[in-house]
Image 1 (cartoon, rainbow, N blue to C red):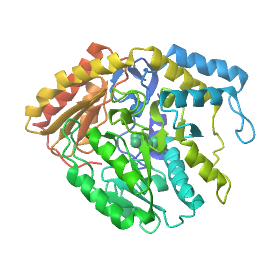
Image 2: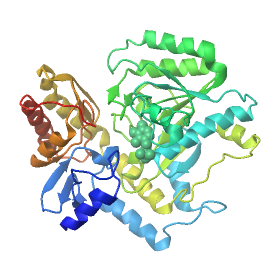
Image 3: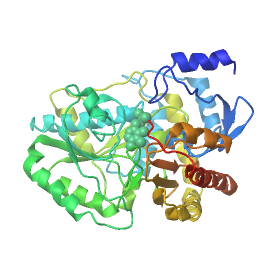
Image 4: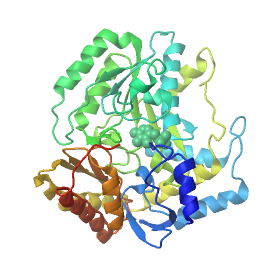
Length: 434
Ligand SMILES: *Cc1c(COP(=O)(O)O)cnc(C)c1O
């Protein structure tokens, strides 16, 4: 890539959570295949990020490519208002099949954040339709992350998503302390008690609680005990509020179950899925809910759910989602994720003894090394590139979420890079960074 193009990118194009005129330029990528990302300078990086939880089958998969090419010959898009197509119908059937027959009504959205907006709107409209017009607030968890649009942000951790920046514009919701970060031990009684206290006082104002089941992702890569979710379900029933589960990061096998809520054996009233839904090919998300909720909304004042994206149910995205789900179900994904889990644990766990490390935790195909201090992203990013891996830490967290098709030696390359970077850190001054 020409130098002038790189300069244009740094000067004129926004990247996620980055200033517009960046000192460090983005890394130019030319292609990607399997678990390898090829750079314009001819080097390869082993991918430890699955492009933010999405490319579970790796890049450039022949089945997924084919599904899009086939659909392209028929039509790339057609509006979904007043029109329907087989791509949407068969995808939605499949989604109901692999989740629960209780979640039988599907709304297709164009991104994860938008699906959260839709879930929140469903909850508000549901209670409106039941003439409980005061129920308009949400409860969510400290360290929660649900997306970057304004409604979604209003239920994200207030500190992490900088609520003070948007004060006066963001709706105010209730936050409760996050459950303990421990998948194996249930020490959450006090958290459940304080949630109940909040509900006793405020449930008449609350339409729903929203949680990421079992794994709190972008808010800190925290894993919690399945009983917590079970108890949340009970309280939501008891105090008559809906439970929204945001499975956008955890869905499609990442935690060792097809959906993370399966660890707790309870169901949400409203479910959001996205990210790995299309195997990382195109942007698509879905909101699934019960017949009772969907019909109640449809009987309400507006007569419908007030939402309709231009690219709703895009056929290319639907087809590649179907192909990705088929590929997942036909593969031995459970064994693959289990093997990744074992290997991550075996190769990362010794870091617990390092004095710079706070915690090491592994669940499914997610490996997390939490440092005691914030990481200097700029220094680490360069080190990781030199080591031939794509790993992008944030705050105190260095984590791996590889594609399920990663080879054993490729995963070792990732864990070795993490170990090497941490052993080098002793020599570096660790300073605060974004
Ligand atoms: C990524 C993510 C979102 C937002 O999805 P986008 O497609 O980036 O809008 C919402 N919730 C969770 C749990 C996520 O991990």
